[in-house]
Each structure stands twice: as structure tokens, then as C-alpha cells.
Image (tube, rainbow, N blue to C red; front, side, top):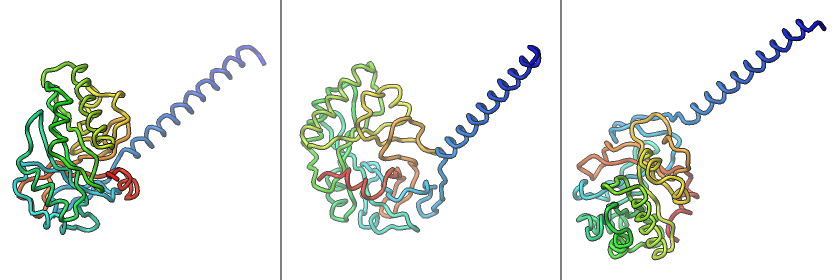
Length: 256
């Protein structure tokens, strides 16, 4: 074959290979986007859209939901959606307890709503002392969700100090209860302030009003997808959550 023809053939083969590579890349990107895309259904009774293909739904509450009629929460069912769990604010900082915690904790249990308690973290305060505040107020029983650390602000401290105090809280609580705590935060805060050092902890991630799964590379257990829901028995707006797995996976996460 003449050198000129050979060079033309090689050029054609090269360009063909590039086109094949680009076609595969575009196809893979499309499949990835379709994987992340989540279909939602609007439920007028709840006042929000809820992501499809999740079977376990729940809410989280604090004093801002005032006095909750837990029997009404338990009874509410719309289509296939029924609220099966509730995260309840217990403590904040080194000495504060949510004024509705004891009532919510007791009433959720008596109405057979699976309950979990969370602590709002003040990064400028000692992590171990904050853990002790939580431990003093929260008695976990078999069938409860693991303790949760709500960390979403730096309060002026460095990233290194934040991580150091968060680790104190997590380690103290895990040692006391014998279960691995859950971290609650939003996508950006996790990426910027926590990161891979905390990837072994179950994650409850906030990501609102997005028609896709939370944009985070690591796995997550709970997704707080909306903060404007309506629930029978609660007079104010409520955060809505879904669990990422099936009922067997959910049960395996509970306190034994």
C-alpha cells in the first residue's frame, strides 16, 4: 500500500475510534443521568411531591412542630405512603434539651412509630460534653433507630476543630450505646467539612426540591427530600424523609 494511502487509512481508523469512544461516553453519561433521575408523585394530602420507588417514609420533628397528636400521625395513609418512622430532636449543645422531646419520645413509642433521637451539634462546644448531654436525656430501647448527630454549621471554628469535636461525640455515643451513630447534614456541608474520614457512618442527607437523588458520591441511608410537608396531627410544616433500602435493611439498622 502506498504510504499516502496508508496514512489516510490510519487517519480514518483513528477518527472512527474517537467517534466510537465519544458515543460510548455519551451513552454512559445518559445512563448515569437516568439512574440519578427520580420520578416524583404529588400527594395533595401531604402537600408535596414524594419520590417514587421508596417504601419506607418518615418525618423529623422538634419543638417547632408544637404539640403533636401522634395517634393521627400513625393513622395517616395516602395510597401506599404511610409514615413509618420519626427522628425526634432530643438535645442541643452541652446542656439543652428540646422541650417537646420527652413527650414526643414517649408518644411516638406508644403509637408504634419507630423513633430515633438526634442531637443538634454546636461545633464551638466540646464534643464529649455534648455527647454526655445526649446520653443523659436519651434512653434507647430495642427497635429504636440509632442516635443521630445533626451537624450542619461550623459556628466559626476551623474544619479541623469541627472534625475533632464531631469524632468525640460519635465515639462517646457509640461506646455508650453499642451502636454506630448516624450523621445528618446536607450535601455541601459534608463535602466541604467532613468528607472521607466519616464515610463509615450511616448518612442521613438533606437535599431539597431536586428531581434527582442526593448528589453525593458516598452511600446514604436516609434522604430528607422536603421540608414543607403536611401531616395529620401536626399543625406546622414537617420535614419528609425516605429510607434507601428495603424493610430487611431497615430492621438491621435498628437497635437490637
